[in-house]
Length: 246
Image (cartoon, rainbow, N blue to C red; front, side, top):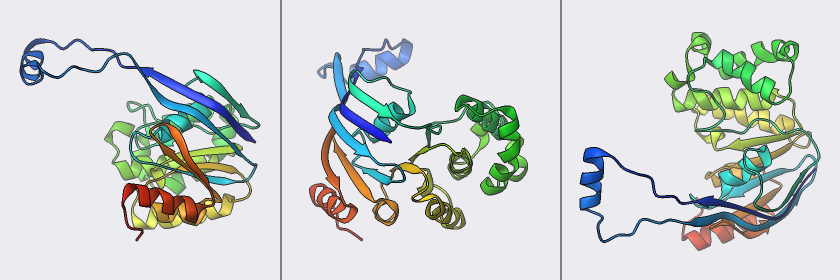
């Protein structure tokens, strides 16, 4: 279903020009500190395989490469090294800051994202009411997404991802952003699709990862630190992070 072989993604760290008063204020306090430049590897030598119907949890500290990995699978970033082979169709990547045009309404975003993942207008017409009902946005569905709270964006993103009927679903933290009632509904929806669709799930909530994932990938500074059954990998990650498991 999904095979990642020796994947590498690098970004350039260019110096951006500051202007006016901001440059004066910031540069006065940073004359002795050199600003980074050149390149850095967000992911390097990452390899793993995911079988059809697996739910794979991806964990790691902030900046470890989790969201970058999902963006590669989604086709947002092409590999600089290695190869990604996908045996199926991938849903739009939805996270707390990705997946939406902020100026368009929620309704327009449903159609836009549907078209981007290859659905026809008739197909979107057939699922749009279900998406709106699941997201529980009411009249806000006609408001620009930039006016939505984090919880509202997470509900809409999760609803679109679950109703897109694609083979591979990518979820970046949106399950943890809603209120208790939404999380309960999201949990039930995840249980419904387990075994039917392949899911890559990024979360800092270890209870969510342990509940749904059949396998866990731990990324550390862009490298694959561990991969295996959830309990063992989570314990390794928490021990390395010196965090007690709740």
